[in-house]
Image (cartoon, rainbow, N blue to C red; front, side, top):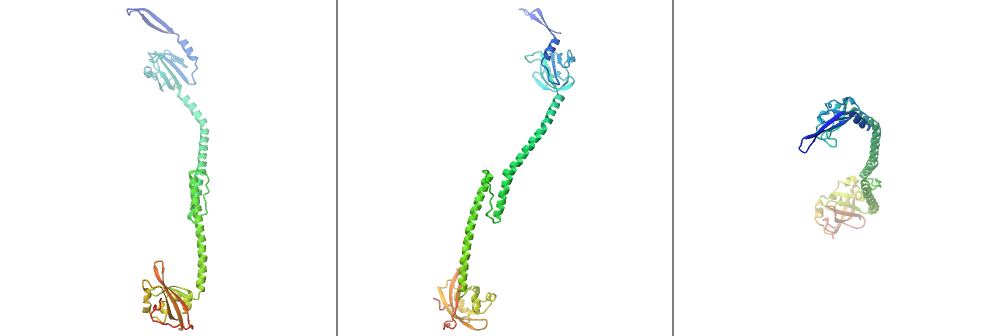
Length: 340
């Protein structure tokens, strides 16, 4: 039994009676036991002097001083949590000091065996670990699938199409139809490639038409019985010539490439040809002269001369017709005296 006594004071402030109350510690312990503690838990109640009034499940602490680990918490002023060793174990302990209502004057502490609590936590962690691992693997697999499906594969297709475009194959397409950012980019690139392919096809058709027209023109040009040459008016060297221009004087094509106009014309001297280098030759002129063949024979020639521009180069266009036997004779010694 625990006796609690205090005086009853009269009007003058002096004691007029003594009030005495008994606390049955056995009954208090039985009352406390009605609310079972969790496994490994311990309960302790002490008075303001640190004397243990009740203890569960180790009732051997009753009547003894408060365990040393709990003594600092007796008058701490505020409730708290500490981790002292008492009742045979290291316990995570929540306490209420003696100066706190509603149990003012009583110190109450409830502690959980830390090893038992952690053991349960570890057990649950071991149980949860496989599930967590499977969840992590599933999340990783989903992330990899997403990366391959929506990032790596579209980028690879777009890069492959770009490599084909770089190599000149504008028919390649990325072929992405989704509405993602990569899909819209691929669609824009495909449209650009399609436009380029259409322009290339039109260009090829134009080139083909030009080649056909060029072939037709070359056929007409080669069939005409006219020896055509392009001459540098400053050096009088043959720049370009038709095969017939070589055949008339009897030279091979390779030999013609090193000839000058005075090497063929046996009527006019090199000085006579110098007026042909004038900055602007008037109109078109004709020249009656003779070409000497490689065998030494002379051929009467009617030459039509005209200054032309190819790019930034001024050249002399000379079209020669063989008039041997037609009664034409050279009439002047100046190369352009007959120009009109």
